[in-house]
Length: 150
Image (cartoon, rainbow, N blue to C red; front, side, top):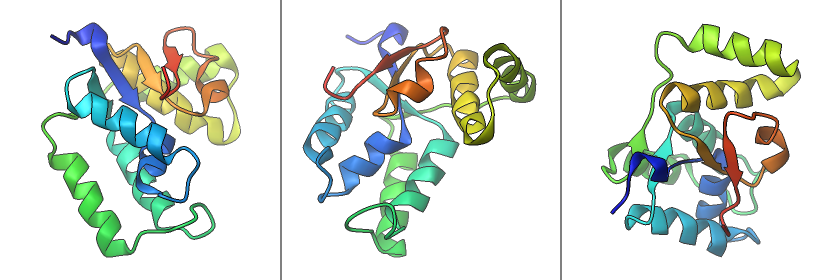
């Protein structure tokens, strides 16, 4: 039986690798995603993560085998409609929550997007993120960073 302590946010890169058969991380990422769908944990995503997924998997500069817009949209729709994957939303307080993290960790450049993800997690009581970008998220003492192999 899973509890809210079992909730794990799945970062964009894990979803991307689970869709990109040419990736060295394909099997591991797909296995983690599917374990979550089967109840081993409560997999969670944000709309931002799903939109990033769609942008990356259709970009031939970022993946070995890009998906067509139609295939990417179909996969995106599956994530949005899958009841086994919890969709979390930032909420009205997201601006102040992100600002708090930006100030606390002196975040700059593109890392602001990671702060937005961390703020959404914190606001929704999710303390774990599964990602290959462990360095990006390990700065946030409020969350625990896991790799798909964990």
